Length: 311
Image: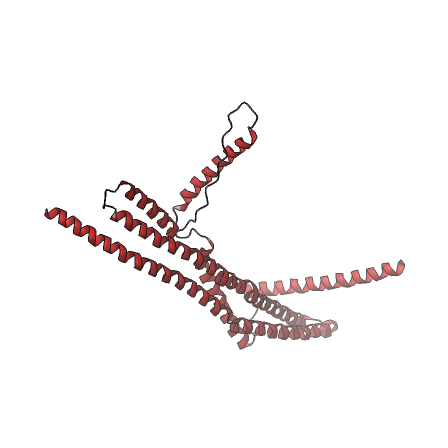
């Protein structure tokens, strides 16, 4: 048992020593960063990083900024209602219907066998897509039914046109849902993944370089002011810090090159453009077809109108 206690104490001592050393380095690098920020360190006393490293830093910063800027705009595809603000009122109405149905069904299930009247259970209405194409298709279809129901014999051209228009927009609505699903899966997810993985790893490697550089310059300052008894230890600390900075810089350069050479962003952007093209092509085809049909009905109606006026 005594041997075990000694071993445990030894490990504890090692861990405490490592923690203390890490804390001390963190403190000195923070002090060094503060001094540099306040202009208390001459430019020539700040270790210059390789030009290749600095060039790669600028390029990675640009790539990261591009990802963030485009993501800020295209994240709308994660929300179905991006083109249909009126859906807010529809959603509130549906919410009220859901609450009312829930209360009715609760009463139907719990008032059986009592003297109180028991309502019949009610089925919830099927949830509707909240997009502009779906809304246009729904309203055009409802309008077609309304117009046709009151039209006289041979007087249903507007109803036919509205019905055809509703059918075209129903196709566009389906294409819109498919577009958004494709964009989310093949563009947004990998685009965000690049930000949170390879670019983030490169950014962390750069942070490690920054901390290592601060520790090196802090060690150089310590060496300058070290007394004869501490000169050797301070010199070794500088050498170790130099080796650490070289190693971390090489790692960061490799990671930044990997990020910049990665073809994934181009593939993701291509998927975005393809999905949008498919949607707009479907929309153009559907509208082109129905517009020709509506135009024929319009010309016929106008001819009939003029003929009736001539008489």
